[in-house]
Length: 113
Length: 114
Image (tube, rainbow over all chains, first blue to last red):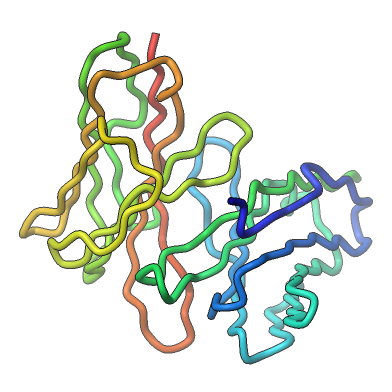
């Protein structure tokens, strides 16, 4: 039962352009959505989050959009930089599961110079 | 350094053995979560402890158990190990306040069962 899905295992973007990572979910009770970034041999690090009552949250080059009717969220990175190359995980907080985070499978983003 | 410490970083052991993974949460965090990441998979939730008490269980095998001690460190015990248990095991801690920033993860323990 995959409640959070990232359908693109990989994405390649030119440096300076926009990177858009997508995520779909099925549980309408999720109350927070988060994006994590993971480099090899490191744990995931928190990037940005959005409450389910909002539709957009911005932090510097990173913006997360939430479309509740479509049960879809996306992460926009503008402009993309080589250091953004990493695996990005979408996650959702389950208030009925003691706030445990449910993760997607991840999308490997590669920024090409 | 995230503030969450996991030991050991790497572990190689044989099938049928038992291992213990250790996690020290970030100072002040009462919640500890354990996750498993198998090859090319997402992070699968195993178990959550809050201030010494088990709060939620995910798809954790009966061969696996965990506990959180009074000093808030946690241990994940894996027994009767099988080849399929080879994975990265992450511990994370959190203090849920206000605009939530999610968990802080440790750097993980890579378990290889041979």
